[in-house]
Length: 153
Image (cartoon, rainbow, N blue to C red; front, side):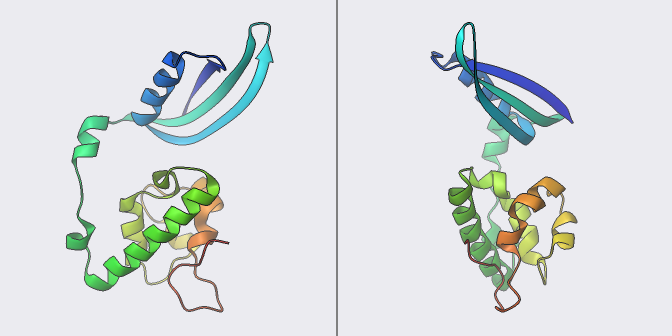
């Protein structure tokens, strides 16, 4: 895992922010920490970005759309759709983009599982311990209900 630091002045014209956003879009981001601080030059946002070395082309990645309705059987697609709804609620509650919670590919793999558990989540490519710690409880069925995904509380 690599680390990159960004310092963006509060009164930034947008150039530094644009540079950081381009970096975020073109790398596999694991975690971003932020802190507002001040120094002799004024207030600045400091971002510590942890990422994997592999990069990808944003333009080609966005062109490759997958139709999960065609890829998954009907019951699995219904489960996938329910999980997408939960993901949308979680993203709104946590204040992050939906793909930060889980990608569509990860959700499709979750939908294929007979039962969603912490162990089964960790077995899916792209889902790591930090993601499970932060989001798993939203997706693991509650014992008192027999539903696929729990509701966001």
